[in-house]
Image 1 (cartoon, one colour):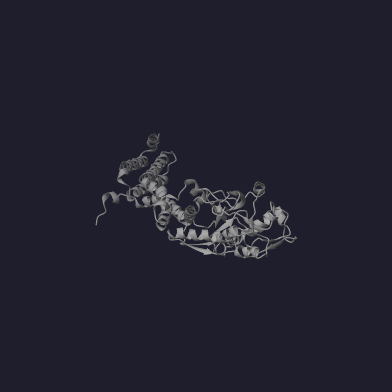
Image 2: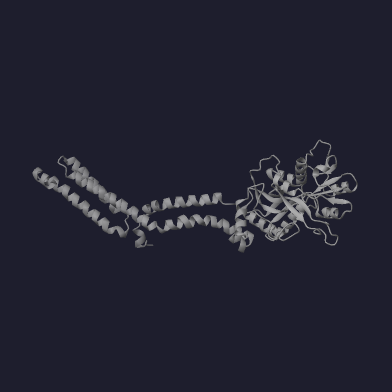
Length: 450
């Protein structure tokens, strides 16, 4: 089978040398893209929530239902509360990917690998007590106070609030580890004088029962503004009269509560695509109006304890998931995004490189022919010197023959035929000139050289 004429004139070695740099740069760009490309997102996540029946567990359960629609399984681990959740996140061997954490916690561990996906909801701190009304927490000194177990955010916040009122462990005040239902029973049976309850460690049902319990009072933070100045992670919330139960008129008057926000915290290794899904789930769960918040108030990116993840900041700014995840199923959107990472260097480097390949090829051929012209001109200059000996003349003729042989045997595309013809004519001219100077008398050779 005959090779087409156009292809037979191509210098394959020149073409290969031209393509090689483009191929190497393209391969390097694609390798870097693949190397730094995110792997496919996992289909299973683990969240550290809170005790059984707590508001934290309830929120995690609702997240799981939303994520299931995107074929993501959310495994829920119960815990003693925010502090244990935070400790699990900082432990590389816990297997926990995300956790609900009360703002304002510090456990002394390295939290540099953690990021916030935003504030999810308020967690009001409710202090129930028996006896005469009190206006300051310092009036609980010497009493028995249930503040929750080690590992709960309730205990951390309770200790901070009591310390601000000069009530500290080891003093005359007895601090109990009871939480939730156990704390409620302790108060009702006279084993505790006051109890701290929050959604971190208590079930919503327990808090509702305490609100309706005869003889039990809810502490009103009348100095709430002073507390929020001292503890910036706390917010002041006013519950209007009848807000808890209009029929029973609970509370009978406006009550002021303090509430830290709860953040959804993740490890920096969490796949960016899952961040979009998690915030989308949180939007569906938390963005409606309640007694404690306005519609659309949560989730929000105002983190008080951890830096907001870049993907989370982008989500809050744009108000929606990225383009592919908005219109495609999760698994397909993930695949499209990963393929796009590889296509970018192809579009940016490979395609433009192939477009300029013919120009680069012609430039290489031109450069080689120009070098031949330079060599012939050098031989011509040497042949006109007065000191030209027969041996030197023979050497120059040999070089001319070698140049001509190289031009004949090396494939040159038809587009450069005119340059090739000029080269060979120049070679013949110089050869004839050298041969003429060899046979002419010295005086005539000198004249010809001049």
